[in-house]
Amino acid sequence: MKKIMIVILAAISFISVKVEAAEIYDVIHEEVSYYNQNEKESAWIAMAILYASGEYQVDPILITAVMEAESGFDFKSTSGVGAIGLMQLMPETAESMGINPYNPLENIIGGTIYLKNQLDNFAGYGKYAVTDAVAAYNAGPNAVIKAGGVPNYSETRQYVVNVANNYSRIQKMMNRG
Image (cartoon, rainbow, N blue to C red; front, top):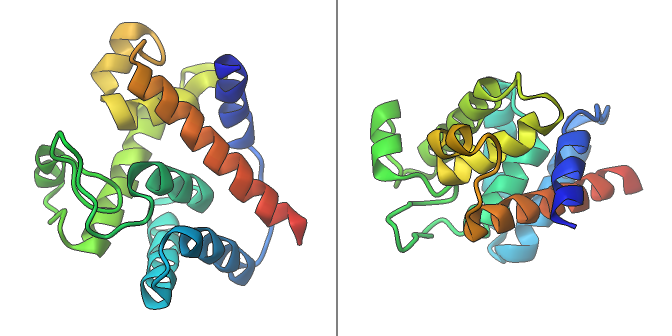
């Protein structure tokens, strides 16, 4: 089942969805609102995702799926290992990009840049490129390179499945209209 979910994540990342920006906003906003009951925050997060997506050319559904897995769209989310904010950036990663991880917009931009870097780093990995990029977002690129794919860490394997499930659900929401 895990391998199927990994293949699904890789396959759906190449699907080109032609919808108007308003439709994308509505779907992302709906997904964010499910977790974050604050209407102003939900609207702001959806707009910030679309901004970062357009600025750095990363699929907004993928950004949304990663953010959902990382923080559940909670501005104040922190992890036990020190990751911060909506995109759960490690302080060292944020510092290397010159961003303040406590600033929500900078956090989303930094997370999008980091995700874009992983997508670029693993672009040549064939049908598992997006899966490996998502795994690298969670475990770090060196762990993925060393393992020759998704490392055998239960947290990372579950993370990849969670992101794939999030992506698939959001993609279905896009196609329902």
